[in-house]
Image (cartoon, rainbow over all chains, first blue to last red; front, side, top):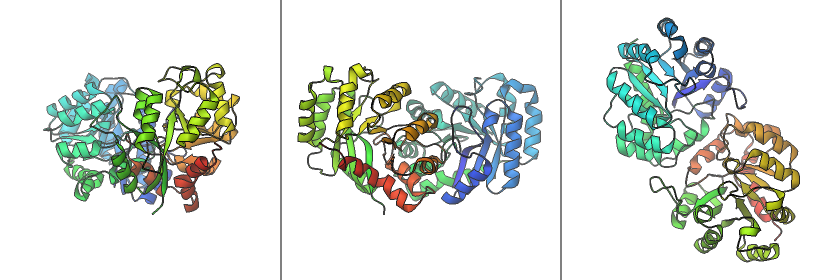
Amino acid sequence: MIDTHAHLGKWFNFYYDGGDFLSMVKIMDRIGMESAWISALIGIGPDYEIGNEMVLEAIRAFPDRFKGYVTLSPYFADKIEEELNKRFSQGFIGIKLHPGTHTYPPDGANYIYAYEYANRYRCPVLIHTWGERDVRTVVDLARHYTNAIFIMGHSGGDIRSMLLAVEVAKDIDNLYLDLTGSAMYNGIIEHYVSKIGSQRILFGTDFPFIDPRPAIGWVKSSRISEDERNDILYRNAQRILSLISL
Amino acid sequence: MREYFDFNIMLGKPTVLFQNNWLDISKLDEELKRFNIRKALVYHSYSRDYDAYFGNNRLIEEIKNYPDIYPSWVLLPLDIFPIDALDKLLEELRRNNVRVIRLFPDLHNFLLEEEVVGDLLAFMEEFNIPVLISPNNAGWKDIYNILRNHPNLRLVLVDLTYRQSSYIFPLLKRYKNVYIELSGYIAFLGIETLYRRFGAERLIFGSNLPYKTPGSTVYYIEKADIPEEAKDVIAYRNADRLIQEVKI
């Protein structure tokens, strides 16, 4: 299993045990999760620099278990180029944007450099989406930056947006739908596979923001073939890694 | 394979329906078998989304040939319910073998104040009848309030979220009859944390079918870092004990 939407650290308004990378590796070992692509929760909150440093520490401690997303803040647009160059030289593999926490539109001007960068190096951009408007915006971005790999975080989140996402993502090869979400709607995995096949659906859990095990149980018990399940659980992520030209 | 007792299932068509995702009794039976769920507690969508009394009767009719499926009636304050007195309610619960009730205070527009449900909750307390409430359908202050007034009430909190530990922990610490249904409580290391702090005796398996698959909570329990004995208690025994200890 490869979790393409994971985090690191604590969240500001609710409690859970652990959240540091050692607690994450422990649970990954227990459930047989090979690796997790992480961004730090403080990074999608108030401080992207501390967040990216925390991720660096994790990927250096466990290079086979963690891959890093560079988290960027639209409020420090003048630092984005420098941060991307620095972090990718340190081995990060993708970009994480959270328009929700930053209350900044996904197609806002301060994110443009990040999309151009991803387009140049064919790297993944994981964008948090919540609602139909976000879904449509990410579709437009994927159509415009055709060499970048867009991961639609949560696939829109609520059920109506998730159903829209699979319709509008149908013919966009560089757009992946992310299963991460607390709701884990019964039947949506089967619906997605029936609509777009299994090769553009990514497994993610938000872990340790949320425990990863319920989402794994959801995927493992979905009524799809083993081949399709393996695409979702790890093969699609492996293919994305092989496409990156950094 | 471990046996499960699912404490949180809805039967019937809801008003808001996506992808035809609802359960009639035969589809429910199929799902239960698929996940080795030997017993189940169900309520009816019509009790929630149309009329409690109508839905409750419909539920009894639909499950009559399934002795391992237990009915959970949705109740309203007696002032606005066709069964308008506690002695009549007791008779109806006995006649239909209803051992658990469920309340939807926000959705059904009533307050969890003593003036409104005090008599009903005192009755549930007296007869050890578990009451299911989702904090997403009642305020946390209301839940704290009813436990202050009915400290021995067997209150099962259902459809929780991973963000609610700060509300849950003080209740588990203070009230010995507060139970947590696990389908929505997907906090990181949540089962391990609850087990370490409060033991296994008040954690209950539930799926929230048809909205969620039982596969999620089953996997969470099976992969939890707690003793196998504790998993049996959570998967089946706590729910079964709650049902058996009802004194009607």
